[in-house]
Amino acid sequence: MPIYISSEQEFLDVAKRAVECRVKKLEKKNIAKIKARTKRYLYTYQVSLQELSNMLEKLKTVCKNIIEV
Image (cartoon, rainbow, N blue to C red):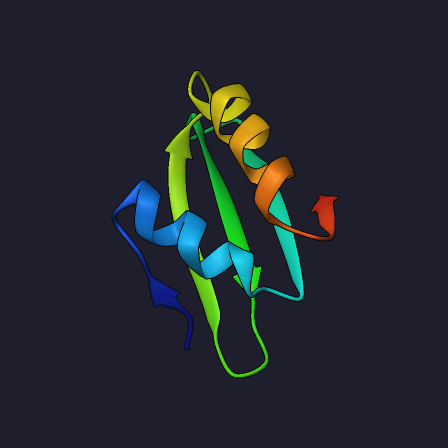
């Protein structure tokens, strides 16, 4: 069961220790889900499609491996 994080700063802290980060766009719902896989847990964070570009810029500096699905 994934752990949902509601704070952007908390998610970026988790993404620092993540093995990989996945970004999935849901066009119908107008949101994007960002998932960070650590050794033990899967963390998820939801962001609107308008805020996705800003979040990706922040994520590129933090996460080692970013995969867009």
